Length: 181
Image (cartoon, rainbow, N blue to C red; front, side):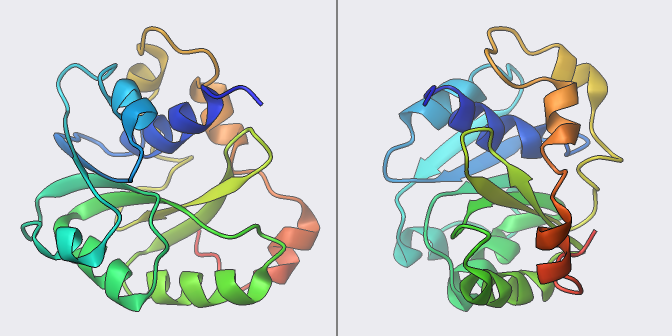
């Protein structure tokens, strides 16, 4: 699989959904590709921390506009991510396959306590991530100018951004009442 697809989708989908992102927190034990994608946004700072709860606990309240998370999430992790995010922040987080409805339902229910919008999106490599947003809708509020002005992309563009949120009916039915869009 093309290794550029995953980092482009994990970074640019939430960053191009936020109105004016200034600070992005990347939670990863291997963030080189994600950090390289963040460098394509000249006016947005990013910080990388390790995938552990102690590192996340040390982050200041309201210090990030966007969090990109590769850490397994439970209620404590989601609570700290919500605390770190600003009032209009977005979270892009890895999760189990959508076929794993039990674990995803639990995760989405926890996310639902903190976020207005929770939507799975296709990463373009056969997997999905979850976008959780406190304010902005990822297809209605996409910043088209930002998404179309990023240089050096191989996969992501504004059309891919919107299309990534299309889900088959069996997924929609399985998560009816859990996905918040």
